[in-house]
Length: 294
Image (cartoon, rainbow, N blue to C red; front, side):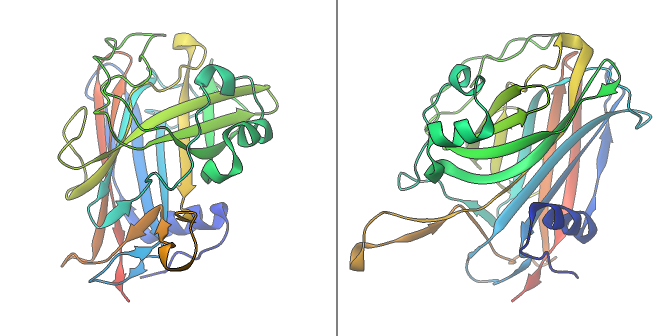
């Protein structure tokens, strides 16, 4: 087993890929896409009897079936990422929330978005890629913000080219949200993507993937890229933040956005994902990370 080093995002991503054994899934509908998921906690050396502070890396990719630069046949419209129940996500009222609307964020640079949301709301970073007309666009940088508490969402629009959402459709309500702010300076384009963090027992959408699920990230309105001529091909983020309730002395409490433990007999942490495409076809994929008892 190898330990994921607590260093930069790039190093953490590389280590995550080397550490786990993953799965890919072929779409059964008309998409003929190849989608996959990667998940990993940093560090994977963890107690077995209590949760320890950690960072969490998540990545989903969607490529054409030949794994070329060609734009995937149909864009992902909804993406659901499932996490092992040995991973705990805590975004309570002591963690500041970004209250900016998507309309406001879409006009801002990364620095402006951080200033508008407040630096205390940031919880991680990552990268995204998109393809438009069989051409790969310049990469996007991703900044993760703690969003407002979710409200129950209604039914999602039926999958189709160039449509989706509305934002927050299918959400359970009363849960933390995350804003994944993607920025491309070359194109002067900003795209906020919102997801609801749902606890097991109150999951929206399709059946869970990856085994013993504790939380799900439900992105029910994935952004379109040039209508039906483009698609997101990669999206990832490394999140993890330590924070307090803002008090001092005996009243001060400490929290961590991500905690994990290694308590399963198989010494595995399970991850899964489900993709719903514009033609309503569905992909599923799983990923397994080894852990070691501290």
